[in-house]
Amino acid sequence: MFTFFPFASPRFIQLQVGSTGGTVNNVTFNVTGANTSPTPSSVVGVPDAGTPATTPTGGVRVRMRGQWNNGDQILRLRVNSVAGMACVPATGCGSTVIPFNTVSWTAFEKSNFTTFDIQNGSFTGGATQFLSQFSCCSGGTIEMANTLVFTYNNSTLYPAGRYTGRVVFTASIE
Image (cartoon, rainbow, N blue to C red; front, side):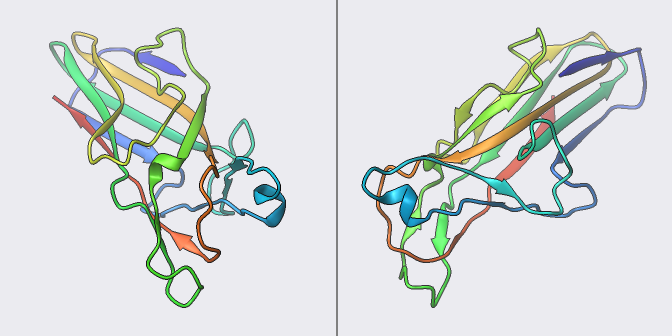
């Protein structure tokens, strides 16, 4: 979804991923024996109970809003997924780290402005992966909002255990 608003001031940018108020939401991938044998299958993530309800159910809403009073501006949404998902100590998987490039997403609520929305994709495991980047508007307010449904590809057999990791989203206006 992409929305244009009338001219406004002052200059600002807002980014919301999941909940508001600094809450970090979790998406869980429960890989069971049925997903590993005899043929590995992808596992769709389940957001935690604190994640706001979305359509489709099971998604995480990513919303970026920028406002400025004159001239075109470049809005960028980046994600850092370098850290990977590390084994939680004492859960049996040792020092294994599952890279985030094993996680993809399907984006929903896309607008007719395909270059503005987040497109379907997967994490690269890089520090500055661009999810959305566009120049816009000669002043005004603009909002981009998409819902992402995450999937773990489960193509590599990792040791059983519990893993945890975090991706960091960053918005900028230039």
